[in-house]
Length: 166
Image 1: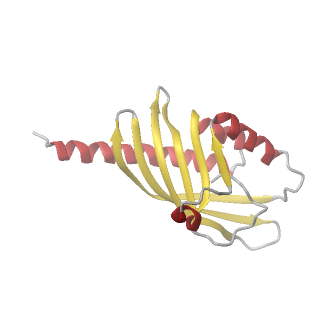
Image 2: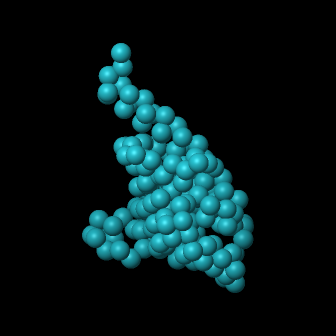
Image 3: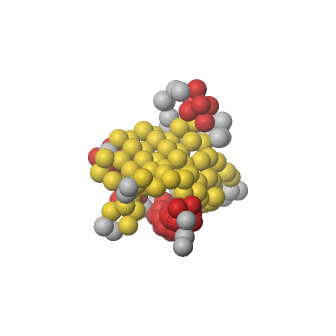
């Protein structure tokens, strides 16, 4: 007979695999610059925040991106796709070290590391951001959606011309 600990461990392992598959699709969507499709990974009332680690640890809320609800995310996507200061580039988002921490009802609390690499035409690739996600996933009829994603980046210096979702 499986103990409660075994069932919890199995549930968290299964959740981690489900989150990894979600994150692979999420990263692929952003790698293709499909920021309209990016919005579809979130619940209607989702919270999305990209913030520097030093600000987060100091309790300062100012970040690169702050969106409450899908309407703000759609606005962010539109603004990014329609800016006149956008230079051609390739972006590659890698998401690793996924951990499912807790399951509470239809929500899964998780963390993962991320790295965003940028390549501009005729320039070498460079690391743009390195950080950690703190996520709350919500189960829906179609699988997982993000209810909250807080991306805390370690990089002290990043290009301010690149305010792209991670």
